[in-house]
Length: 218
Image 1 (cartoon, rainbow, N blue to C red):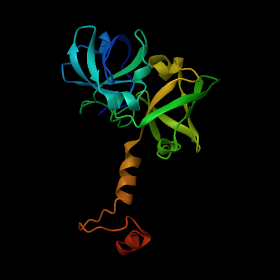
Image 2: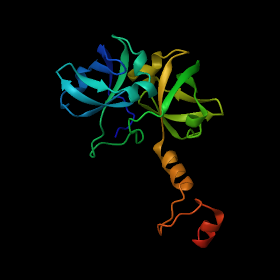
Image 3: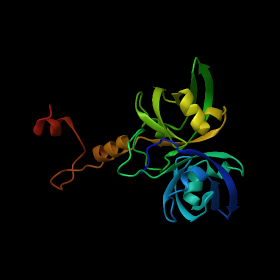
Image 4: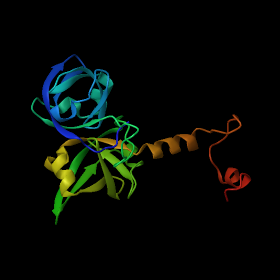
């Protein structure tokens, strides 16, 4: 698990491509003091496993499913990426709970500055937008942000100068593809409401007003 608070802007140090997968090398010396082989590290919000390490960075294998669902396929050597180590139980939760499992990608369709803030407009598919709510949390390339606007085609976030400076989002341009992880709470609630779950183990038609009345909720 992660928090969406980026620790370092890493550099893509090498890409070794397979037929549908890649081996990715990331240079990120600031976070390598306690990284071990097998540790989970988020790269642009994607949970990857360190398969080798050095004082300067680590390598990770990226499977075909991850390549299909994320923007890793468009990375080039020398490109900057957001990097975060996995959450420790003793850490402060400064962002929100982020799993590192990307729901899909969106495209930056708008960018404008307002005083000290940068507004980013993200166009995304409806199956992603249904989980995006105003004042809710969303992770973009692994960065925890608050949604300021949403409709049936896009949503918007606003970056403070600190976020723009310590992540790659400050340099993102219109047309760039970006990884999106929606707040997991909405996905679990939807699953429970639509699955026909019943506390007694019997199947039902999901959560209904009759169920709420029978159990004293309304």
